[in-house]
Image (tube, rainbow, N blue to C red; front, side):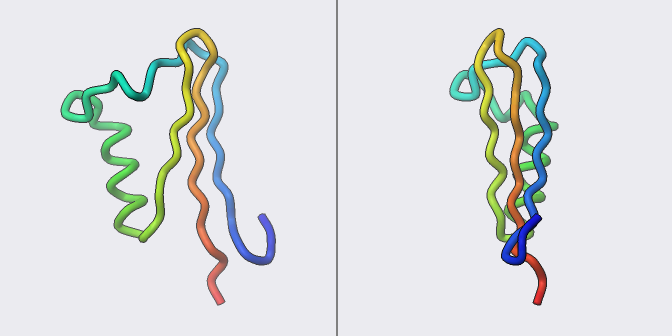
Length: 64
């Protein structure tokens, strides 16, 4: 958290995956999270590599 923004980060050290190879029509969890972020005018960032785990970030500006 800073004066300008709140950052939410979820990270694991699991199996990971190739985000480019994911079919959004079959992954409702990631699609739902992304849609909710867009409803707030934000972007959900998903970083993952096979065998390296996954990090999901959401950055929100602080309310004034």
